[in-house]
Amino acid sequence: MARPPAVSADQIRATVLAMLAETGDANPSARAADAAEPVTRERFRRAVSVRRLRARLGAGDPAVLSRALNAIETELVQAGLTQVALPGLPDAIAEQMRALWAAAVSVQLDDVVRLKTEARDAMDSAQAARHDAALRVELLRVELADLRTQISARDSELATARAEYRAALGTLAEREQTAAALRQCAEQATRALDDARTDQAAALATVHARYEGLSKRLLQETEHQRHALATERERLTTQLADAQTRIAALEGLRERLLDEVASGRDAHRQAAAEAAALSTVVTEQRRTLVALQTQQTVPTQAPRRPARHNPARSVPPGQMSAIAAAPRPPSRPPGTPGTPRPSHLRRRPSS
Image 1 (cartoon, rainbow, N blue to C red):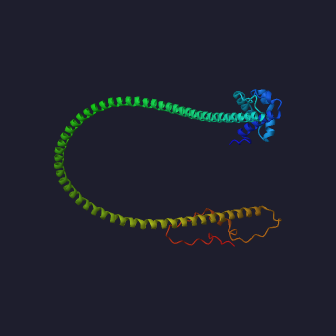
Image 2: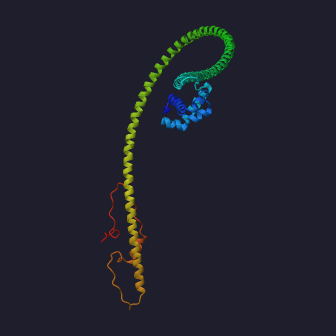
């Protein structure tokens, strides 16, 4: 928002007129010479300046004051404001006439300024209205262009719709022809269906009669099969009882055989252990025999080591060879009581 000016145009105008009047009063010698002269630009510039006007008002923008002085100068020069020269009149009356003329001119100038202001306001209003009208015209032009675009688009859509309508009419005619052909086909199919239903009813009657005969025959065969199945079931039940009895007997035999196999396995393990012990004893006796033979070949002067008392080594050589050549005892059959082993074959307990 613009800041209001410090000095109004009316104050500037009144001050300028007052300065022009004071200049004329201050120079009485030039009053008679200037009374008949109009206000010229040189006279106006001599009487009024921007500096003097600002000093007289005490405030104001020099640019604004300069524009106001130019406007007042133009108005006064164009209006032809002159000092009223009335020869033969006293100075007081002439001065009053000049003041009256100046007041009249001032009022006229005020009216001119007011008219100019009103004209300027009217022109501004007209320009604003013209601008608004131009904007409205521009908006109307834009709307008209949009409407033309929409109308063009609608024309295109309408042309497309018409083309589609024509195509739809052609398709509808083809569909009607197809529908007529389909109606004929449907009528023929209906007649064929009626014939097929008639044939089907006759076939169903024939099948029903045949089914009745087959049903009776099936019932007879089913009854015969039921009797045969009952007989076969009784036979299989008897066979199942016999098989269960045989299975129970076989289970008992299997358990007994498993026990015998376990006893035979234990006897075999025991015989193997006895054979290993006997082989160990034979090996020790052979070593003893070799040692004895070696001692016999040694000279008699060599001291003899006392032999350790070992029952196995005290066996004579003839008995050792007989023991080595003796056959092994057969393994006991499972389930038979064990026979006592010979005393010379029994294994000594470990000390």
